[in-house]
Amino acid sequence: MSKTLLHLSGLTKAYPGVIANDDVSFDIGAGEIHALLGENGAGKSTLVKMIYGLVRPDHGTMLLAGDNFTPAEPRAARAAGVAMVFQHFSLFEALSVAENIALGMENPPKANALSTGITDVSQAYGLPLDPERLVGDLSAGERQRVEIIRCLLQKPKLLIMDEPTSVLTPQEVTTLFTTLRKLKADGTSILYISHKLEEIRTLCETATILRGGKKVATCDPREKSARELAEMMVGGTLNSAKLQKTTLGEVVLKVSDLSLPPQSAFGTSLKSISFQLYKGEVLGIGGVAGNGQDELLACLSGEVRTAADAIQLNGVSLGHMPPNTRRALGVLAAPEERLGHAAAPDMTLTENAMLTAMTRKNLSHSGFLDWPRAEAYAKLVIDQFDVRTPGPHSAARSLSGGNLQKFVIGREVLQDPEVLIVNQPTWGVDAAAAADIRQALLDLASRGAAVIVISQDLDELMEISTNFAALNAGRLSDARPMAELSLDEIGLLLGGADAAA
Image 1: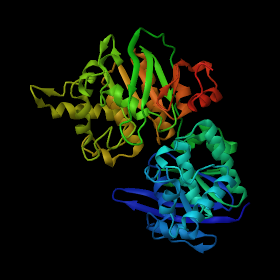
Image 2: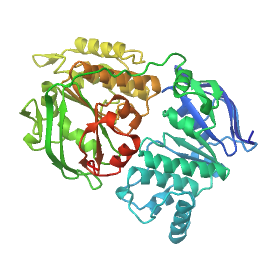
Image 3: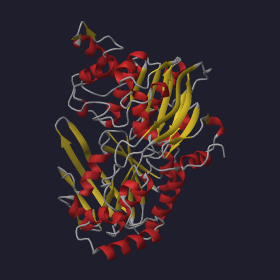
Image 4: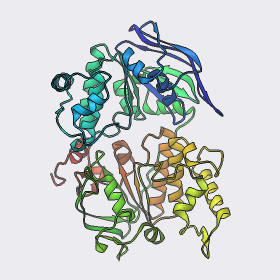
């Protein structure tokens, strides 16, 4: 047994109407990679925030290297030796790597010394990075290196990582794991949060599992299957998505030579994208973040207009049409950012249902909004997609990420689209909710709809896709049957290898 670095005893944190953490106790050993697992809403985020000084516990104690540990703010946690790499990067695109790292340090060294330190640390841990490059020019994987190196320059005793591989290619994941194992060998402890259970089994030696705010188990994940870990998280049997054999129908959506200039200073241009989508098909489009996913969805949904003939639905040109016109014709979309783009945070679920379903679900008559009918539709989505919420009058921002995602996907699926485009349908969603969402997409395709799933989760794409194409630097590879591709081939395509090769 390794010496204990962090000891948590009876940590409890309550908010109005909910106990986020209830008497949570466990230890993280020195030089240990320790997984923290749980469904959305299980209490992982609150627990990590208490360790990092973002939230004060109501009850309980923490000991770091044997000393009382009560950080009042992240600055105090960092000074004590606790660093954190968040799921969503906090970087300024117009600044250099070195400038971004300096902003995250209490007392940054002079510019030359900082650049030398960045270079030395990046080389020592296999994370090559040029301190002078603009962050806006970096790939998602390189941006994550900036966050990690900013932490490593502080020589942390404990490094907390939240969903660290969600934006990485398989090759970049391998590099990251090599780095984390080197940190472990050097004595750094790592608290690793991820919904990717095979990664947990590969990397971690201990896993603490939360359910409903309580610790329900501690185990060696290497001795469990991914399904066993998932069922410990949900407290019951996990249903896997079941792909039904479907014969593809005729072409329903045709995209021809679709190009788009960058929409912002660090935006990605789309370059001559062409593909055909068939009825009953699930086309998986993979790509590391920042390679044109948002731009492609915006063009297909109508948020950004294109040449009329660049996008055709059943032979009808619609590249010039706005979103509501496309929705009336059957082209629906669910963007990646669920809170603020897919749903209005301060609006109720009923109001959010009205926003996208008004036309296809007949939620207005003679210019008047039919609120009782909209509420009934919101209730239908809540019931059929097991959305955990008090009811349709709850504000979107009051839902957990996984429950809001189920509502967003359900709201679109139940409108019976001819084409549905979804971006990151299960990002940050627990195993049970992810399985439900994937099954809903497969069921939709089995009923004859055509589905495009844009995702950085390769396990997800391999599970549900009929065909696969990779998006790299705004170019889309030729679509190929998913069953014929290996994980290595997919990784190479994501990195920009010629599809024909």
